[in-house]
Length: 166
Image (cartoon, rainbow, N blue to C red):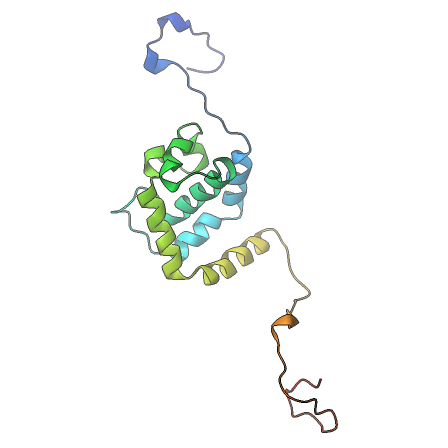
């Protein structure tokens, strides 16, 4: 049925009624997630176990991000409830239903992220996103507050190679 066709709703069964879902700002977030290939980068680095879940780790992370933008301060086990009101297939991926985003799946995805190393992944994913956006850096910042000095100043002697002179 195309949008231009007229349908008499009195002739439709309840299953045939058009259903609407709330997209809000989540479409923009999901779109940037896809544009920057965040889920793909995560899936490239983390082994997938589709015997245990219907969604990839990257899709699970996307679900967690979207959930965080729309259902804050709620427990992980309530995530499927959040996705009942949004177009899950459009936001997460084809064939993904709210029940696929349960606490077991999301918890295992978080465990997989931890096992891989979130620091390593956090270096890789933003670097790839910056490249996709054409963002380069000409400068680097060194946090000098993490350096410490113990002892006396030795300013009369020439410093050894590679030693910072205070």
